[in-house]
Length: 346
Image (cartoon, rainbow, N blue to C red; front, side, top):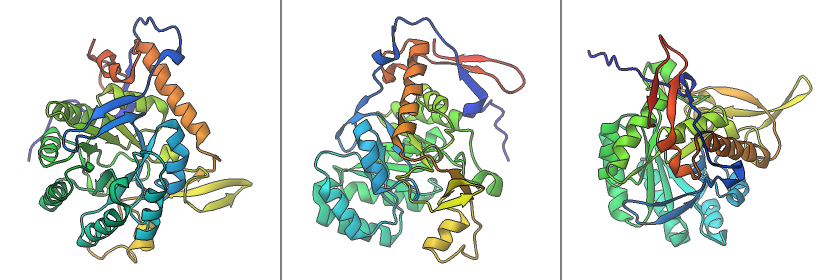
């Protein structure tokens, strides 16, 4: 048994300290990023926010709605082969929509059928498992990279620098970071396993950038300020689930309650999801997610504008003219815990 006594932080534990700025307006801030990925060598330009690969959020409709804003979507893995081929084949321009998959034999076979028919339209893949520390996961990533050297691979989830480095060396371009921080995830309460998300982002980003890799902060963002904190901590991409739930482009069933409309939103390890896709919770495991009702909010465009406005505003408060400058100009101030500390980069 070992106890790590270093302070670890979630987004709610800090604020970003303002600094003098020469920016006259939020309109002067560019929140696009450009990357050349380590292994695929493909180039990316866009606003690095991704809708999560949850079946209520990672939909075709969400992908089409976010594309005009230069945001991305990780499509959920439960679409059929024909549906996916039609979607990727219908794209009239380059898209950063991610094909999502697990690590079973069936997942690999389905992916190969889609790629065979859709061809080069599938440029991004998200390999998503709850526990990115297993040998089987690492071996799967290695084999997929060997078979598809030109595809950009995002994979996870992990929360430590050492595993981030291993995945990048095995062929991952973007490491998914986060175990248990999501709004409908109960992994931390059910298993006692997890890691405060901001500290995970800071430590994994440091490890990834030393190897020319990238990370995606997955989970824990409940407001635009949390997204700014993730970017300030070094995240290259941020993945959102709950913040994009409850919109017209989502797939959750709408429920009327007390004169208001709500939409079902649930974790992909919840009892609801497992009953839908696996016939129920297997006898050897427990559900690690929950179902909630989110107030229906109509088209997602309004929420996206609020999110992007919040991130731009954060940049003006610290004088970052471009999003890539935010982490260099971020100083976090602790607002919870035994005492307030100021730490970060000046």
